[in-house]
Image (cartoon, rainbow, N blue to C red; front, side, top):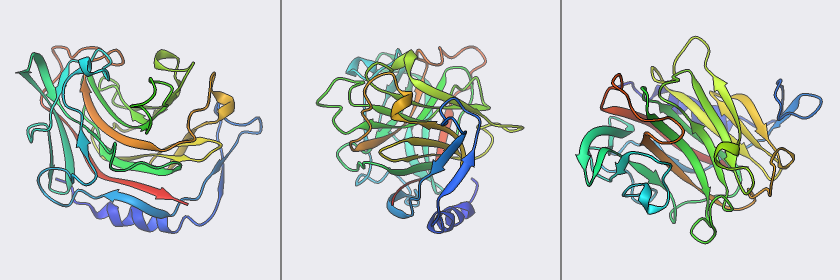
Length: 278
């Protein structure tokens, strides 16, 4: 496994972000003059560096176990478990592994971790350093859900997709928001394309900076999208605490089913997860 020399570099970089940067990008979500303002979040309030071998830290992470029949599926094919075959910390990384196997009526297994009831935050910088899997039907994601999702029907609670990825498109990731009037296929979204590289061959940092006025999306600290209340086609529901979810789905409406070329097992490696506030 690759060592974690970049971890300290990331902390130093974040600690010295004591200024406001104005970036110029061409995007439909920019203001009319093409500017986007990057917020300043320097105080770390939650982090997992995955340095303790075995099960993930149960003070930070819990699991969704089961299938989409539980009410949180998207026509996915896997059965989510908390078994070490599907989720563990090893050599300084969190490993989420999708296997092709018959298990409780499903043909695939994987895992879905979340901080619901353990950690949530309103606004800030949320980021993770991840190496993604590959292949038709692989659907890894790093995302946030509104803390009130057990009380109101999705998408009223809001969803912020920091990173979604189709395994059959190894150079592209997607950043989106879902809310009332703009969910599912109508989400407000933008795609980032990696030039001369692939997301399954190395680690990349996926993050957002979230304020009352906008959500900025980053890959390796490159700002590629900004979503504001003016950009959504319904109510802006992102002024409340959200919790974190990291998962690797198999199949589903976003990616389609695995095919004969899809190799199993496939593993999503997470180097760290960090959350900052201003």
